Image (tube, rainbow, N blue to C red):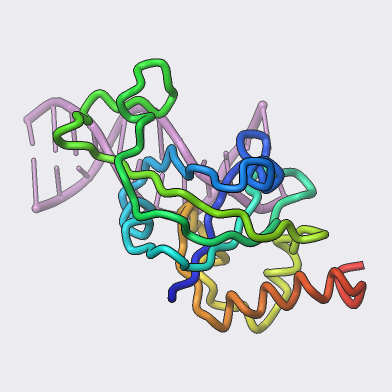
Amino acid sequence: MQYWLVKSEPETYSISDLKREGVGRWDGIRNYQARNFLRQMKIGDAALFYHSSAGQGIGVAGLMTVASMTYPDPLQFNTKSPYYDPRATSAKPLWDAIDMQFVEAFPRVVTLPTLKADAALAGMRLLMPGNRLSVVPLTKRQFEHIVRLAQSVRKGKANG
DNA sequence: GCCAACGTTGGC
DNA sequence: GCCAACGTTGGC
């Protein structure tokens, strides 16, 4: 069992979109390091859904589980898609997608400032300066800590 | 295989 | 919309 944090701009695809779909495809990843992390995912792994570039709403918005193995991202073959990659062929695909199962939308986003202010999360890859990876691993401790933060938000104990 | 130019991410 | 960080590309 591994733990992950994956980013999406909510204007493009948000936790509510995933909630509506139940199982959604995580596609459009065009960075080798992120892709390689994707390939390490196993069915049943836990993942946090992070809303990036979201104004006041930047942060961890919910919870999901990995619902498939990776498979070739169909967008890389789609000339109409912004994620089209002319170098990819069906014999030699370059990019992978994976399916995610919705678990929970947090009642409130665990915001980036909250994450940054939390000593227990110092050293988290997400918070490293200049980190832009859209798929990052988390330790079990970090994962559980963030879920606990979300629960304390629910109970009104933190995050005003 | 170096490295400059370029593109993208993502917080602010 | 700006810009820092950093990955990727391509000329040599």
